[in-house]
Length: 396
Image 1 (cartoon, helix red, strand yellow):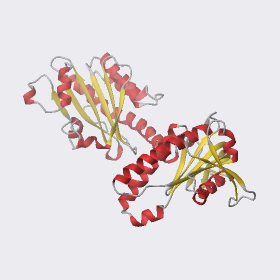
Image 2: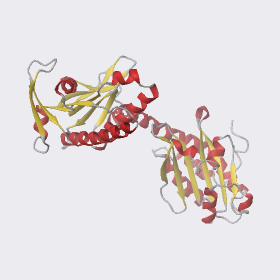
Image 3: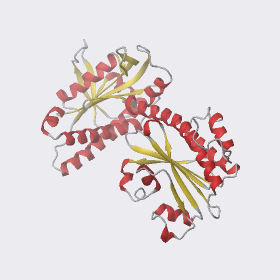
């Protein structure tokens, strides 16, 4: 059934119809939101500023705020971190009130400010000549509440017809935004758990077990030393913090230089640098050099609190790998397999025996030896391979 009063014509009816029928081909909610605000103005509703606040499932960000103001063709997007709820910008704000259960926040900005809500945002809007502000929850399924706000500079603020029109938008905006947010959420979760490139392939339909392709890539496997001793002797929360700091030090340079981390395995990681990028192998060593500096800085910080320094080993090889879906009928992993991956793993294990942090195979070294200073460490037996392998160390 329709909500009471939804059949009453309003100035926003054309915008409601456009949201319902005219946005099917638009992928991004921020573009829809900006266009909606422009259409509201054209329909005679004097919106001067509007924001859409969306909670998102992201390892780093609590949410995103999309802001439109008069004259803008696109909305500005700002990401909001998890600590925002402890800061003055949130405490006492309309978002705070709505997240605490308010069904509406209305602030008549023309009235005496001594009689008004106290928050820097209201002072900022008054300074810009805005006269009225209203915020409502935007309801998604399963009780999820997001927020939409509108402000005007019209003398006297929004009238009853304007408010009725804006309220009529809310159910349709909720449906339209939920579809886009869930699409973005699916992409974010895939990027978070399997990596950006693998995520794109999965979204494009690469979901059948056994599907995949052969990729020529530089393979990097990294492992933390003495982790068993650390995990046995340190408090659980300290171990988790240590692992997160270690993975940040290693992972951020990899991503910055075009690598893709396919998985974290306990205290280790597997990353590839596909050779479709012309400087992939050099990029890998640049990432290793940056990671070495980040680990040195991390050890310095840990040393100041009495923690022992962390050590690691990295094995690097280059070759063809099978890149795709592997697993059971109901649980798949998007990863790489093949002799080249096995070789990188064996070289990582050899770093302990040879006392080197980074070991490179001859095949990889030949692709970078003109650009980087490498240390030849001789030929060595590698478990699982019949012939000794010529190895090089890289100090960064």
